[in-house]
Structure formats: C-alpha cells, structure tokens
Length: 593
Image 1 (tube, rainbow, N blue to C red):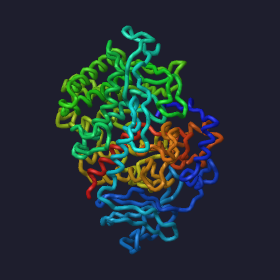
Image 2: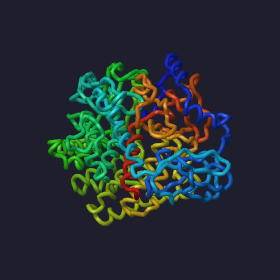
Image 3: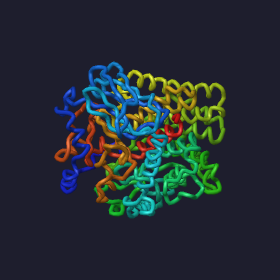
Image 4: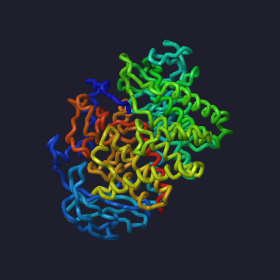
C-alpha cells in the first residue's frame, strides 16, 4: 500500500472495462444505502456470519441487525431440523456503522455439519460449516498469494494453475537515483536487486513495508512452528526440507539484502519506477527502475528483520549455508548506519511519483531493531537502546512498529532480566486487555473504533487480532482467543457489508480489486487469497473513480466499493496479507476442536 495513490489515473479504456465488470457484490453492497453521505443508512436487517464457518470448539457469534432482541434458531442446511435455539442479546448502536445490532451466541453448536441461522422477521443467514479444518484452506491460500505476487520470476502453471504468468521486473539492472547516491555508488551506478514481492496493486518494492510484512511471516513460523512444519503449499520450493513459509519469506529476504549499500551499511528506501505502471501485466511493464533514497526508517526496519531472520533460519543452516551469519552482519551494519544517521528521513524526489512510505517518528523503529538485535546477540547495549526508545505498545502498522519489539521480547521473555521480562509482559497484556474490553463493549463484538477505519482498515482488524493472540499465548486466557476469533469473523463476512474480504474465500468476495495482475490477466476472478483493504471513509480515490464508480456512503464501516479504481478501499498490500496469514494460521492451530 503506497502512501499516496494520486498517480493512479483511470484511462478511458480501463473505465470501459470497469463498467462492463461492475456488478455482483459491489452493486449489492452499494444498494444498501440511499444518500451517498447520509448520517444513517436504509437497509433490510440481516444476519451477518463468518462465511467460512467455525472450528467445533471455537466461539461462534452471529450479528443480528435490528433494534430489538429476537428469538433465533439454528437449522441444518439440508433437511432442516432445529439443533439450537435462543434469544439475542439486547441490541445497541455500533458507531462505525450507525446501526443497531445484537449478538446470537451459537457456541453450543459443536457437531460438524452445515447450518444456517433463522431469526424471526429477517432473511435466513448464509449457510456456514462447523469443521475441524475451517481455516486451513484460508491459511494456505493467504500465504500462497505471496508466491503469486513474486517479482522477477515466472509464476508457473504447475504451481499457479490459470493464474500463471510470465516473469516481470528482473531488476538486474537497477539505476542508483541521485537521492540514493553514496561515495561508492554514485548516481547512475547500475546494481542488481532481483526477487521480492510486488508491494500492493502496483509493481514497486519498498523496504519499509517489507519490514513489518516479512517479520509477521517469520513470527507466525516462530510462534507456531508445529503448524507450518511439513505444510506444503505447492510452490517451486515445496519438498526441500524447509517449511514453505520460510521458503516464501526467503524470496523477499534475498531482495532486501540487495537493498543494502555494501559500502557503509545504509539501506535504500525503495526500488521503483519514476511513475506507477499502467494497468498491464508485469512482463509488459518495462520502464527503467531505480534505487530511490536511503533512510533511517529503512535501515532500522531492515536491521530488525535481518536480526529476526538470522535467529529463525539458524535452524536451517544446512539449507541456507552461511545466510544466518550474513543476515546478522547485515543487521549490525544497518544498525550502525542508523546510529550515525538518526534523522535521515525519506523525502520524495521531485521526479518520483510512486509510494512514499515516509516516516519521521523513529523511536519505534529504533526500539524494534534494538529488541531483535538483543535477542539475536545477547548484547546488553541493545537492550539499553531498547529501553531508551521504547514507548507504550499500540496496534502495529508499517509506520508504528514499536509493538513488534515488545511482542518479540515477550515471546522470548525467559532470556530477559526480570525487570525487562515484567515490562514486556505488562505492555503486551495491557494493550490486549484494552482491545478485549473494546470488543466486549461493541455491539458487533470487535475492537474496531471509528478511528480505525483508515486505508487498510481490514489489516487494522487483523493486527488487533494478532495482539490479542499474543496475550493468549502469554496467559492462556480464553477471552483473548475469543476476541481474536471475533476479529477474523469480521473480516470473513460478519461485517455490515456482508462481504468476506479475502478474494476467492467466502460466499460474497471482492471481484474487482485494485491489483494490476488481477485487472490485466483477462481472468474474471482476481488472484486468490488476497485481502481487500476494506472500508475507508477518507475515500482518497474518489476523484480517480469519478465516472466509473462512486461510494454510496461515508459511514466508516460502509465506505467500501468493489471496483478496480478504488485503491483507497479495494487495493491489496503485502502488509495486509501478512496478518491474515498469522491470524488464520494461529486460530486454526490454537482454537479447541
């Protein structure tokens, strides 16, 4: 997700194609509101469900829209027959949607099967399964989507089926932009930096956003290794004796290593064109590519990720000979550069119009990098640096990574001095307790507040879930696991739009995501396993969508359109998909069967 998408113009040809494609879920969602920016919405009350269903022993909640408590029953999908009955909670208004809703608790339903909920006076719910593997396919698809967005390699039919495509952006002849010049690599120097993942709907690669993304995948493996060992996704590296999640992360790590200036340890901010590519396939996007900028944020994110990776891949030295040591050296060099350049903020050059990912608040990056380097090296001066820079934990995002340091320290708390151990446990616990309280107090049973409906709001929901899962890992308090489940339920259809926001997974899913391969490949369905950004009342793309689509509501939880033009609500991004991998895998692994 680049910070600014003003460069995305909708061509006349694309507009025509979009008009032909417009329909399906986008039209249905839009018709729920009448006045585009009214304070309330007119709609028929619905029963909202997680469209992928539930694990047998998991919490199971349905949201019933309406202004009064109602009786409900659960029936088998085939043949009918009531298996559960009850009454909803008292309804209350949920501010992000400006609607009243109540909860139907289906937790007593544990027998595998397919069911639906019926509520007096309302349409029946979507059918849903209770299944011991409810999220296995989602966990695999959300991770495999990273293979499908690899840069610099063909995506092969043997692994991708109909989503196979030619290689794009080999990035073996990348030019050093004037903004990234150094004594050893002056402007115009040609370097090689192949591999990596395309960042979002565009074809560029950004170190800052790769930081939180790659760490989240590495953390998923480190926290739940039993889930990922032997789990084959059908990628080229499958069967090599390395968990596929680590093979996939390595594809990006090797690109990140090439983003470090070997002369002084500084790290290039991004590898991009000067302008965003048009809506073409990767192999048709052939504009010159540049290393743009060197920044403290990039160096610190790089240091944190390389320190984490060095620790994780140490167990696979035989398959990655010398790489753990190489990554440790790279992390330490980047840290030294950042210490010498503590305020080298990224400034967008005048001739560059791709995503900025600018960040001028760097205490969180210093703290995160220090935490990971301490866990790798055991050197006390890194823990001292962490203490100087650390602040109270908050829900992580690409620009605020401070919580990642606290999470890593809490995960390895046995290696900490007593005071540091207590602080890490307290920071993770207090943040999770706040989120759990917000969830309990919400008529929709989610921690999301109106302020959380930003660009990539679905990732906010999932990062909240990831924090809740840390508290569950620390305390084994079921309340935290249930609250995390509820966040996943929201993303998978238990939301006011009735959409499962993951392409290809659910009964009503995004069909027209803002994602160049999905728009240009001639296949009606989008690349599967990708998370749509989600409702965003700021609607930064409104001018670019004018003439082909428009938002029907500015109400926070309703401000979404299923349209290719909508980069502000319907784009995809690697830092959004990574917490989807983490949360779906964790809940599949942790939830009682």
